[in-house]
Image (cartoon, rainbow, N blue to C red; front, top):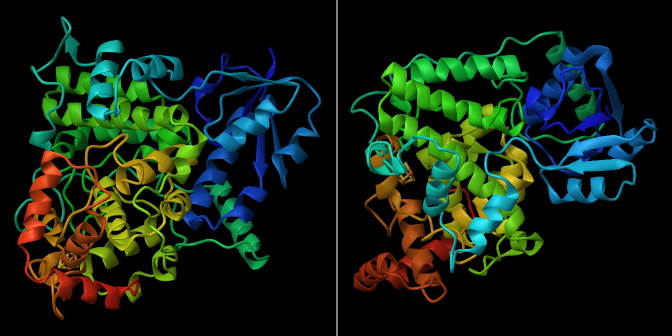
Length: 490
Ligand code: SF4
């Protein structure tokens, strides 16, 4: 049986065909020289790879080299590798004569099935349509060809505001991994690399995300039993003192390849059918995995290499240093400061602070999408080229003018006020758009619409918003104010 080369995001048992298969693991230090990763992300990647090497023992050749090519020079035998997750890595493995590239693993819908589905669609590709296809194709929450509960998406039931007067959701916290000698070694190596000039962002902290398949499975079981029921209704809500809410915190485990996504999906379906978890919660979690995650993965390959440079809204400004360096202390806007602080301290945020606080602010300010892809890739424990390219370029920044989403994800302070407890403790007022108290999100929202209205394709939803814009009497003043504010931390 040929030796299987596993990248650091292919670490679960489902990336091997046989539990005794010989393995190659290469730790490339050059990866950390190229971009300033979040310190906790670097820790998680190295910890996961070294834990896998320790589990496999003599079965694995584990090399620590400057580049992958340096590592490959030390191994003479033929190798197999599962389709890597980035274009750069795919080019590398395809350029090597003695490496056989196998189809991808770690996702649910295959590239071929997706391409067939997408080729048959006319016009824009929509997650909702793909999600139906995937539910039906993989027979998840489907009976007699119909969705269980009568509707494919129960998203409307899953948009509750946070509970009144609560500062935290009433759910047990996710089990946190216990650090061991491997983590201690990783931490010492990263300290040394930093002294030698390799730069990281964010703060170091205890490892909060699973580094082994065992830790990931334990977190999944706990989530399905204790947190999934609450996840659904509050999946879009934010509380300043509750960074995890009832989210699974498993995205990094799926993206490291520690967990098989279809197993998690089947687990959520069982939790609904056997354990009384409400259908909207199970459906919401399943949609995140076989819907969004697979949609984004497949689009990364389907849209091709030019897509990452899309910039149809002509966003020309550079991401400012305070944002890039997660300098939460420089920011007065309560929501933005708290979200940057959480990211600095944990390397993770759930999807709403990513999309409706960070992404929304960046879109309003006209920051370059390619720089934002890099920011999200580097700063999040679950960030990779495949996941951040389409999520940021297409969904968050609307830089493809709607090839995969129906409208720009842009909103004023009213949305943040409705879905969080941030605004009560803020020096700005979400209802005010001009003046000292003007909420930067509210002012930024109208300034963005005024500046981009001619580029955004017309549809009924946008027409209503533009009609509102036309009724505002202070647009000129507002635009001047936002120009003065520029990219200074708000
Ligand atoms: Fe954020 Fe505006 Fe609310 Fe302040 S008032 S927390 S800046 S949305």
